[in-house]
Length: 151
Image (cartoon, rainbow, N blue to C red; front, top):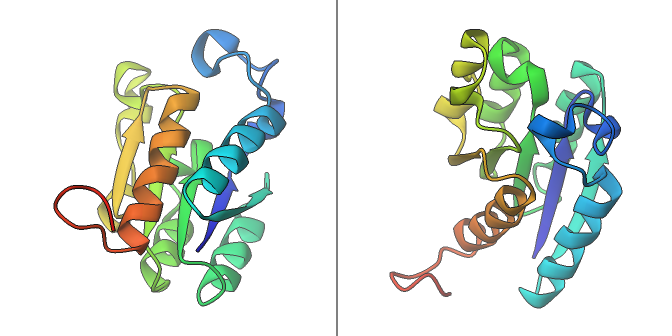
């Protein structure tokens, strides 16, 4: 099983950008944790980050048929990118939306996600743990887990 980890704009600055909101871990450290967990789950992760909306859309399109699910932190695009929303809706693989900070406890403009209605689910506000939970969810959804959470 292969899962795409898709990081949106400014996430390349994790570890130094507003650690009070986003924590002290760098994107590389998060990716390493995801890789370790994926191996334990019998999966593989492919990680990609872009500050460009079109790059994220292109990678989502390419992922369809190449991976089994996507863990996606769209960053600020969460709140207004209908192009990304449409790309998520267009692919046939499940997409789990994830955010390090609790978008509902922050500025008002962050309270709305245009991605959530077309995502398989959303995890918000749990820091790096949220990414790990999103990976577990993506693996379970892609593997069509049974009632006990196992496949």
